[in-house]
Length: 234
Image (cartoon, rainbow, N blue to C red; front, side):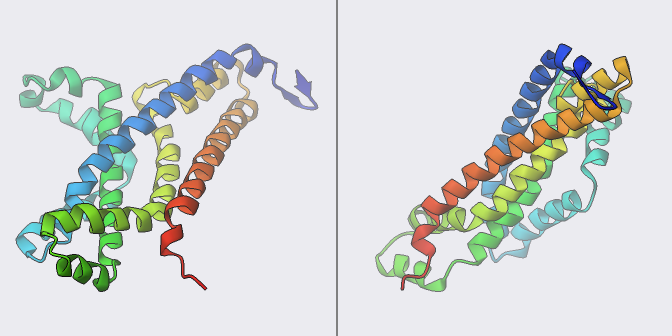
């Protein structure tokens, strides 16, 4: 199919590359978000504790990760660790030598740091009255955390976390630099075969936009449902 100076025929002929690349992108996104959120939840709770011996290491972790580019973090995990003989001789080498594992590890660590700060901010934003009401009802610290603090914090964190999910989707495009065949990798393969940079990458961009639209719509629906109790009533 030719549209003026553009030729989308090779794109259509190689559409299976974009499909397989999209599945890899979604897999990387889902696993990194799941692992990152699982790590961010306890870190956010530790970050909110008053003892500096507890919250400062968490703050340092999030500060360093958020202060360095994800591409550098990916290179350090995939290429940097391999230079140490102790790493290559360890039981972890079969995983650390895998580009797939290293990409998920880098993405999960990065989103964990950002999500930790998002949840911490949401916990800090809780009205003091909610905590006092839980105490007045005789709830223990753990019960109030499970029934009051975390559910309320998750609701307040939804808009910011939705932005983080979209940013992580875009960041997964870095996976192609460590040989993974994601959506961007599929576009690069088409470009290398036919030297059609505009057609190859604009197609990938359209797919990214479509996935973003779905994610944004899902988070907006979640916000309408779960943020409604926090809205002021007239």
